[in-house]
Length: 412
Image 1: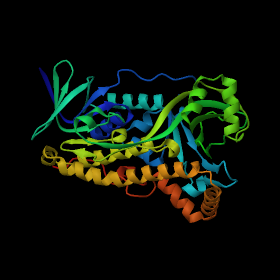
Image 2 (image 1 turned 180 degrees about the horizontal axis):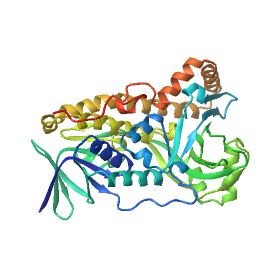
Image 3 (image 1 turned 90 degrees about the vertical axis):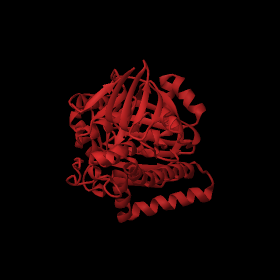
Image 4 (image 1 turned 90 degrees about the horizontal axis):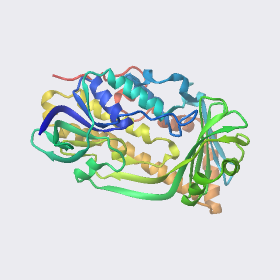
C-alpha cells in the first residue's frame, strides 16, 4: 500500500477546494488537494453559461492568494448598480455606486475564467501537491485522519477539509446529517443579447414562479440570465426553439431591456436549500456547498463558500504545530464563526423567495410598501448594500475592507 502524508487534505477540486488550498498554502501550510480536476472547463460560446456574481469581499479573498490578479480582466463585468422590481406592483428598489461607497457592487466572472486562474496560481504554489484520487473511506485516529483512496493508496492528514460539493461523500462518511428543502423550482441559465444596453446594471424581477435575474456581461448589450421557475416551465425552456424562448423571456422581463434578440442554448438545474447540522466532526470540517446550499436569488452561494475558505485558512494558517496536532478547537472556532452568517443568509433567501411568490392582495401591498420604504430611506439602503457586498459584519480579516489585519502566518 502506498502511503502519503500532509498537514491538510483538501478534498474536492472545484473552485472552493482550489481557493481553500491556495489560501492555506499562502499561509505556509503543506496542503494536498485530492480529486482535483484534470482539465479546465471550455468556454461555452462567447460567454460561459455559468458565471458568478462575486462581492468585493470575495475579490479581497481572491486577491490575498493571487487568484484575482490571474483572472482575464477583459472578461470581468462590474455591477455599477442594481434594480429590483416586483412583477405584481410598480414598486422598485434601486442601488447605485453612490450607495455603495463609489465602487462596483459586484463582479460577474465566468466559471472557466475562475478555474483557469485557480489552476495557474496553484501551479505556482510549491506547498500544494495534487492527488487525483477518489476517497473510498476515512478513519479518524488520535493523531491524524487516514483517507483510503483508490488503487490501494492512503493519505494521512492532520486535518481534512471537505470541499466536495452539495452531495458531499465526506459529509456522509463523517456521519454529519443535513437538513434539506426542495423549492420545487429549477433555475434556467442562458446568455442573451438585448435590444437596449444594460448600462452595467444588475436587474431582478420577482415573478410568482420565482425571480428572474438579468446580469450584465462585459459586452454592452449581452446579459446572463438566471430564471428561477417551475420545473415544467424550465423543461420547456431547455428544449423549445430559440424564437419561442426569446419571446417568453421578453415577456417575463417585461421588456426591461427591450426585446431579447439572440439567445444561447439553455441549461436548468434544481433548486434546494440544504444545511449541515454540524460544520465539524473530529478532524474534519465542511466548507462551501458541503456545509450549505442557498437559493441563487441573491447570488451568494460561492461568496459564502469563499468566506468559509477564508475563515478556515485564518484558523489553520496561523495555528502552531501543537495546535494543528489537536485541531478540534480550531475547527470549533471556524464553525462558530461561519454558522451564524450562513444560517442568516439561508433564512433571508428562503423568506424572500416565499414572500414574492405570494399573490394575495394584502401581501402584495405589504411588499410594495416595504420596497418603497427602503427606497426612500438612504441610511437603510447603504446598510443593506454594505452587508451584501461584505463591507461590514463579522467577516474573516482578509475579507474586510482596508489593509489585511491577518497575514495568516503561522505561530511558533
